[in-house]
Length: 112
Image (tube, rainbow, N blue to C red; front, side):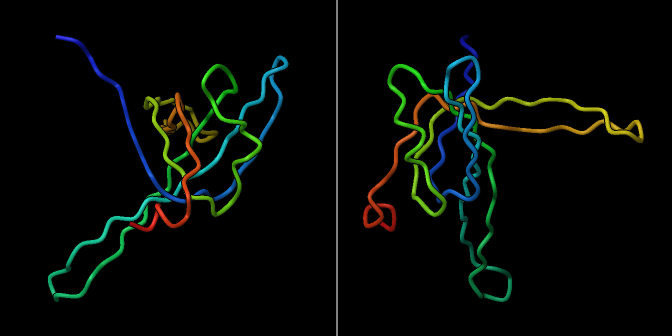
């Protein structure tokens, strides 16, 4: 059996920050995805989830400077968790997507 750690999300970019690390551009950005379902009362409910994405410039990656707030994107990568210890001694877990591929979508295609 082969282990698989792959995630694909499609949503809209929230905050974006790019840095240069060892002469390589790194983009840290958030992506909002929406899930719609019908609640017990019959009304539609919109559940928004925010995902943290890290993308490193390199072969096959888009120009990371093109990622802008509000842009519809498709991200494929792997999930990574990091355990941090807070100042009060409690453990906190942080989850992020390590992007292998980022595509900026045409806004009209993203709505369908």
